[in-house]
Amino acid sequence: MQRSIVQPAPIQPLDQQHHLAGVADSGLANQSQLIRFTPVTYTLEELSKLWSFLLKVDYVLSTAYIASVLLIESDDVAPPDAPQPLAYSILALPLRQPTIASVVNASNPALPITAGGQIALSGSNLASATGGATQVLINGQAQSPAIITPNRIVLTLPGNLSAGPTTAQVTQSLSLGTPPVSHPGAGATSGIFSFVLAPAVAPGATPGSFAITVLTAFGSPPGPALSVGVIPTAQSGQRALLLLTGGSPPGTRLIDGGKLTANTDTLIFPLPSLPGGAYFVQVMVDGARSALTPPQSPTGPVVNL
Image 1 (spheres, rainbow, N blue to C red):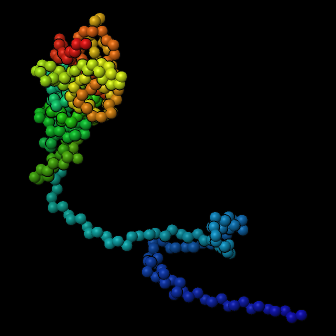
Image 2: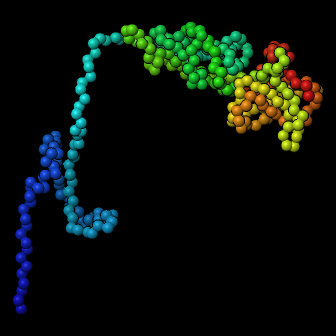
C-alpha cells in the first residue's frame, strides 16, 4: 500500500508595503504613545460565546488582541490668535441686589390694582448703581418706569394683562466702556414678586352706571341670568364667579360660572331662585375679586332682582 504525502504550500511573505499603504498618511508614527497589540488567550468556551452573537457569520479559527490607546487629533487648521486689546477698562462694583418688598396701587395703596393703572414697587437698591437702564418685567413684558428711586419705582401697567396673579421683576443693565454702552444682560436682577390684578365691572352707557343686565330667558331650558361686563377681558380657561351681597333678608350668594371656553369681556351667570331686593355685584376671575365703589361706603355696582 502506498502512502501519499501532501506537501503544504509555502507561506508567502507579507507584502509590507501593500498592507501599510492604508496607514501611510495616518500619522501613527507621530503618536505620543506607541500602539501595541497584545495577544489574549481565550478558552474554547469563551471563543464560542464570542462568536455566538455574530449572526450569519461562519465560525473561523480566531485569536484575540488587546490594542493600546490611540489618540485621535483633529486635522483642522488652528484659528489665528485673537487680536490683543489696545486698552483696558476695569470697573469694580459693590454687590447691590435689587429687592422688591411690596407692590401696591400707586394712587392709593388701599385700592386694588386694576388693568391700565399705575403701580408702585417698594424695596431696596431699585435704581442702578452704574447709571444703567432699569426696567420692570410685568409677566415677562419689559416696561420702562415713570419714576425710579433707590427705594421706589412707579410705572403704568400694560393693557394686555389678564386678571389674576401677576408677577413683577426688576432688571438693571450695566453701562460699560468709553463711551458708555448699555449691557442689559450683565446687570443685577431682583427676585420675582407676585401681586393680584383685580378685575373691574365695566361702566355702562349712562354716566355713573355699570354694564350689568338682568336676562329673563337664558340657556336651555330658558331661565334668569345676570350679564356683567368686565375689565380686562377674561381669558379662555379662567374661572369666573359671581358674588351677590344683599337682598331681603340680607345675605351673600356665590354663583359659579365655571371655566371660560373663549375670551370674553361679558360674563353671564345663570341665577338661582333668590329673594328680591338690591344686591351689590362683584365678579371673581381666577380668585381676583372686583372692588365695590367707593371702598369706604360703597354704593355700587348694584342690581335689583
